[in-house]
Image 1: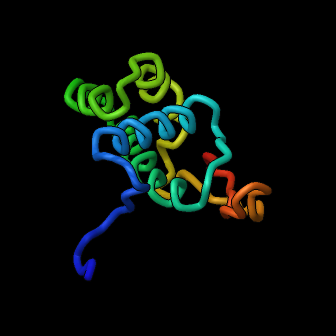
Image 2: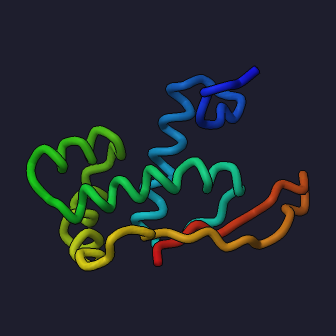
Length: 116
């Protein structure tokens, strides 16, 4: 039973999974929209929202937390100088998931994860 076990494993090791989610979050923050599977989008959405909240607050500690999570200094710089101030007056809900339908090869549910 998986009681109190949150998160998805995606059939990979924890290090690989963390790197996948960090790369996906960087892509969303860099491009504003990314096409991925529904499971991955649901897993990375809270991470992106937390990073935008850090970007709104600013501060050295929040920058260091964002860099350690995202592992990309350029995206972190954009997060704190462009994306964070853009959502300064918004209390939450920075991303949305738009369903696209099943993928041709394996019928996985595909979605767009995009910034609002």
